[in-house]
Image 1: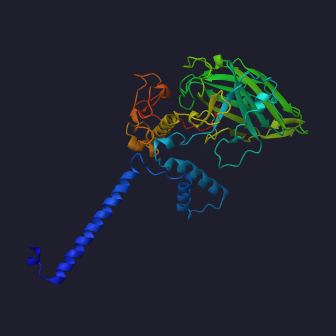
Image 2: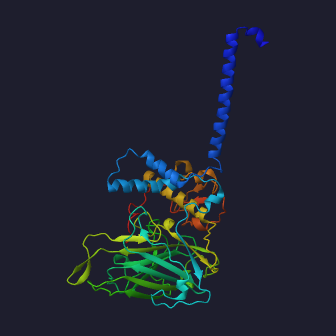
Image 3: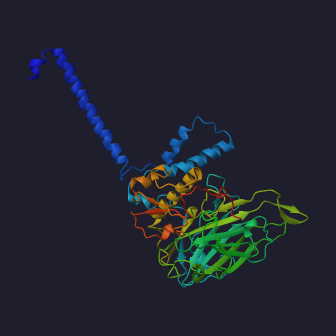
Length: 442
């Protein structure tokens, strides 16, 4: 019937062209919508971290970064944002996403270690060193000018730690137990033996063999108003230091000091939620290792700290601040008996990472707004937390101090895809995070 109404040939052509264009645009719209929908689903395309970093750098190409500070700023900016903006393709990608530094501690399997600080036993020689320590602030800073690394073993009673600490000036003055070793040159480790982030242990030692050990109820940067330290805790330590050089003698050639320590699992498990003190096969602990290095000068034939100088702080994994007590930046140690098993696996890592990222976003929100929020949309969270790729979209519940004691998010019953984020020490009243959370613990 249309032919009877549209008798003009030119008009017919115009109508046909419009219909074709409309159909083409409609099909293009469907295609765009389809791929846009895929981008927000649980099958999002993996964006390589390097591609994200290059995109950030190219977008900042017009910014003047010719100064050392400008270049360092851009490197740290890329470091903070590149991983954060990666989109994950499937749950398989979650297991290793953002995995921190990790080490496999192998069982002694009937071998023995003589605690003398030398690390020359067969039991040490058959296991690898950890990665070299890095600047505690970030890997974008220059590598430490002195090398530090460690090894770990274990048996059915004790955990063994051996460390190599390169040093050109062997110096220490503190000789009383529980002295503040970090004020001089020291080596230390912090460990969480049950994954709860509560009642973690800290141990420091210097070249004289002086040790400081304590248990902290909670990181002082997360629980500033609570009595958190217990100097009464002791790890039943066996320890020895071996020095290649002479201690407190300027002018000679010093090379390094080695330290060997062992701790009973029974004492490490005190005040924890562990049922069996000895680790099970493939169990994972959160650990961090650190080192302080003072700037020294020689006055009247003795080493002295350079007045008003700042020490260097190095650690196994970067803390992104001069602070070893930021537990979400610690590394992971897995206990194994089979020395042929070289694969590190931690099936719960994506849960911990989700909790860490949520809590970090909550703290940033509170620092700006003076309170927490229950709306995840208001938080600066990585996109994977809203894509249902690794976990279900987290639910936020706020508890006031008056109605709830400290809540342990890590031990709350949780499945791989049912994560509830419960923020600690929360109140609906305005409050602020300590301004010194990212400085050295004193």
